[in-house]
Image (cartoon, rainbow, N blue to C red; front, side, top):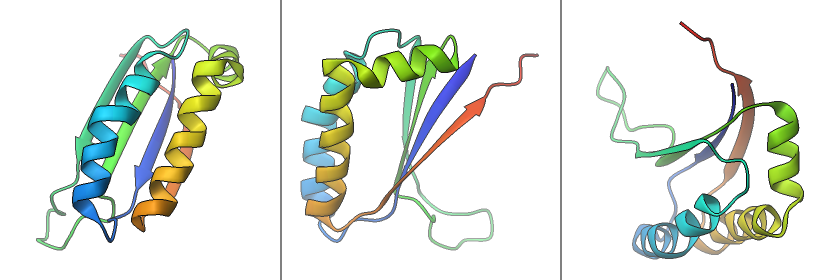
Length: 105
């Protein structure tokens, strides 16, 4: 199992970010072919009480690296990637993406 994790830093316009993220971006991501599971979360802080380094994270799970590549090559994947970049830029956030192999227990 492979996953793509998106890390968004705190936007300067949090309300606009959240409104678009929930109403527009999440449905786009959910439509990506080959998506097995998706988890999203809002950062609330660190264990030592500092602000969270990221305001939002999203984990998108796929069966393989090839499935991730195919998903992002699709119309839905291109729309999702474009929307993510535009959302971050428009609301003053930054976006970092990481692909990782999930440890199976």
